[in-house]
Length: 347
Ligand code: UDP
Ligand code: MG
Image (cartoon, rainbow, N blue to C red; front, side, top):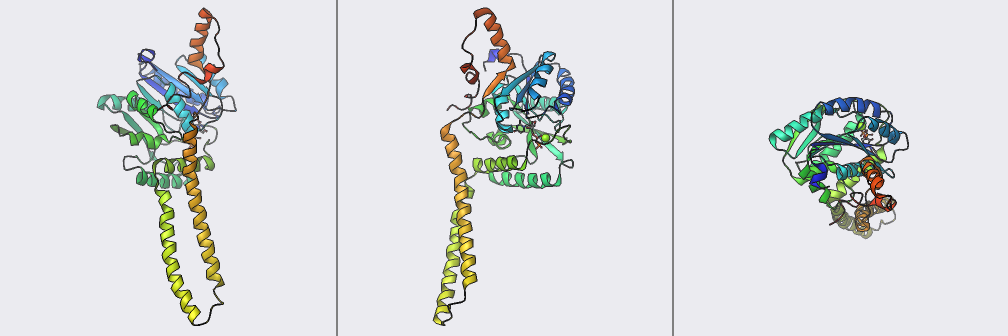
């Protein structure tokens, strides 16, 4: 996006939404006064991640008397991180905040983040969860394990308990857009960029309405993308397990030869069977791990866009204006080009 197009827009707020019709009215009611109260030019980029419910229709209604609200609708459900990518690609502000639609992250913290970033010249301000008491025990336990592992794999600069509620400067957003990564995990990519950063602490609230859009399968996917995106350590697991198996075999060789010399070779079915299962299990795990990395290479080689834009209220308004003056031009293909899905994949 050119500097001219974003001139004057200080803040963009990116909100990924997937089937959020229940949470949307409360979200708008709480978000708007906070942003209006800032007294700066802002935009809200609501990314409808291929919702099957009335999310898109509700957004259109809301936008009718909230001019700062813009909807970018994806053609199909592409996942939270892909929706964030779409939002970052389309946001024009000098600062870009991202926040969930379910009000688990308090919108009131956004002005605080902005103030901190501008006062101290920071490029990144993380929202860090102070207390997860409203999350289920299972969620807390898995989240604890996740952040522990990520800090070991990616490095200490990954803040524990910082999800996707954060503020980025324009420079940080452009740096992210230049990355060729396909399966992005922003909570790791952002700290990895190494920009000066700060934190704003907040208490994680309960989801205001509706139910979680992160079932176990999506959580596992995020964890796998996180690990394979930042570490080749699991690949080395095969080497270590193989070494252990080799030395175990040497010991067992000594044992079986001794037993053979004493002429008692028939018993031993149990050890044979257990050994067989053990080696078979290890081999399958290692092939599976290898598969995860091959899959990543496969996706990278395909270079397919992470999302497709079906509709962008800002661009459609601009196009309607252009059409009024210059007449209709080919629309169909245009929906997939321009600042759309291809952006950020080049390089
Ligand atoms: N979300 C999305 N696409 C998806 C899943 C989730 O855009 O495929 C959005 C969702 O609407 C919400 C945010 O990502 O704004 C976080 O999801 P959710 O609150 O369900 O996750 P949880 O807080 O339970 O981890
Ligand atoms: Mg949530």
